[in-house]
Amino acid sequence: MRDLTTGSIPRHLIRLALPMACGMIFQTMYYLVDLWFVTRLGDAAVAGVSAAGNVQFFVMALTQVLGVGTMPLIANAVGRKDRDDANLVFNQSVVWAFVCALITLAGGFALAGPYMRAVGADSATQAAGLSYLTWYLPGLGLQFALVSMGAALRGTGIVKPTMLVQIVTVVLNILLAPVLIAGWGTGKPLGAAGAGLASSIAIAAAVVLMLVYFVRLEHYVGFRRDLLTARWDVLARMLRIGVPPGAEFALMFLFTAVIYYVIRDFGPTAQAGYGIGSRVMQSIFLPAMAIAFSAAPLAGQNMGAGQMQRVRDTFKWAAILGSGLMAVLTLLCQLRPELFVRGFTEEAAVLVVSAEFLQTISWNFVASGLIFTCSGMFQALGNTVPSLISSASRLVTFATPALLLAQRPGFKLRHVWMLSVATMTVQAGFTLWLLSRELRQRTAVAAG
Image 1 (cartoon, rainbow, N blue to C red):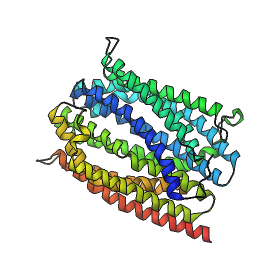
Image 2: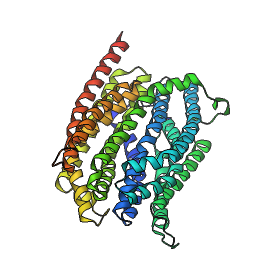
Image 3: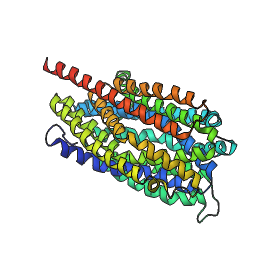
Image 4: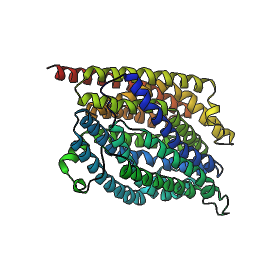
């Protein structure tokens, strides 16, 4: 356990963010490795795997409920020096990780086919996506165990073990991808199914490594048999904080599904280009996300300790650092967007779509970074409803106009990207106002 209630806030942020960013970069690498090999299978495979990968947003909605419901409660308990409550929350998180894994597997196998038939541009795209999902679902189910253990460590101010586990499993995925996708050494390429299987094996290895760490090295929170039975009062505390962020990721699933739907008439080339561009964009977001994720436990511990000024200073420094990084990345994407996507495809038409998407969408990088930071602060404050309201507002401002634009003559892909930039900018301003109001209310309560 590391006490974050004293010492330099910028130093704490950087110390937490650097290993977290490294871990996130390596974690994202195995999506990009899979994508690189899948591009060799053709546009339909890329479009299918990308559309199927959108299901991860739905699973992430459930993992957010679990992770966000766990981390702030443990961080607050650490700030209060209440180790018993931290252990109770952790073990309840483990119980519900198991339940969520079962729900993911059952729901995923039942709904994968209808989903791909709804969003796939053609039968080849649908078949590739379904093949990928079938083998990736076990890995998605195992994600809940990783999230539970990782959230507990982050709440106690520890991030390096998670980073090291992610690095090891990414290396494993990189080794498995050419063997399973392309058939290197076996002569039996599995195609899109191999991409899903490689990721599932890597995630399973990560779960085993994290279990070993908790059993042998973690001392502040740990597995306790007497706490591994469902406690509905603790679940209510977790859901109160975790459900709104989970609903946010469900909205992201819907948001992305709307994009795939409105651009499907442009064919597999457009969907493949968007799939590559969006995966690269997610990787570019990692620096801002690492800072935002670091702000949450830092502000959470200080919230538990009743130090509201340090909570405010955490947001200030996280916003400055995150916005600065995103501004630099915006400039790079404006000057040479093709550098970020070249290498993932040899199809000129797909490359054009990816580069245009990245160049246009980069105008909302700074706004996205601010939204991530605000989301982390809402988690620390124990009220994540404003963040959900913010995300819901964007779905309303984007989805309806996008569906209407798609029906108009002269509709182009660029219109979708420009609409996304405009609505993200509006959302950032709205989210900052919501956070400012929440901080004023919390400060008034603490002062009274």
